[in-house]
Amino acid sequence: MVPLSWYLVLSAVLFTLGAAGVLIKRNIITIFMSIELMLNAVNLSFVAFSYHWKHIGGHLFVFFVIVVAAAEAAVGLAIIISVFRNRQTLNADDLETMKL
Amino acid sequence: MHLFLFLTFALIAVGCAVNLLRQRHPISSALSLIGVMGSLAVLYLLLGAEFIAAIQVIVYAGAIMVLFLFVIMLLNAGEEARTQRSKLARVLGLPLAGALLAQLSFVVWRQLGGGPEVEFGGFVGSTEALGRALFREYVLPFEVTSVLILVAIVGAVVLARKEVR
Image (cartoon, rainbow over all chains, first blue to last red; front, side, top):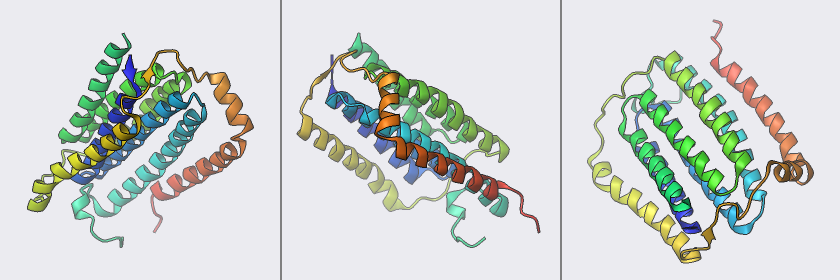
């Protein structure tokens, strides 16, 4: 038997690691992956609360989050490709101006 | 058994997430992220979310991560360059991340205490129930999502194409 709060604390740990990744990583692809990690952490707490309230709504929300994450990954990676084509770098520290 | 499965896959998830941060090569980070997503799928199954577990593996670990690997290989991304980080970040970074974690855990603990026990099979969000809710109460968001995906496809094609000069 596992208390529900363990799932929520695990979700908090994964979210913190994702947030730390966004701050400490320098490669924009890895930063993007850290964002996906945070999305996954939040999904876990949605599913845990769905279990808690015995309600399917949390599962539906996770479903929509996954769909939006797929769309976001497609657009984000296209932006990364376009940035790389213009700057020839993936290092977030070298990308300081928004001008092309 | 539940405790054993939870601990095993929670440890794998956290270990892979830490590995994601430690690795300098994006491919290694992507593989660690797949590990996190796979173990989260098992945790979803333990919580009775069978459909979510399936699409977690198929869409997240399958489709989205393949997209990531594709872009990493397309751009030939190498090892991350070490840059001079500010001293302030080195001193404050870890304590602040710890503070965020402590706050989140504190709120969870305060609200739930130990919380109710999770029992395998205590609540099963079957695919049938999910489909019924999706096509009855949530039909409008579902349809709007299809427009969102169409916009995302067009946006991705426009952004990633070669510019004609």
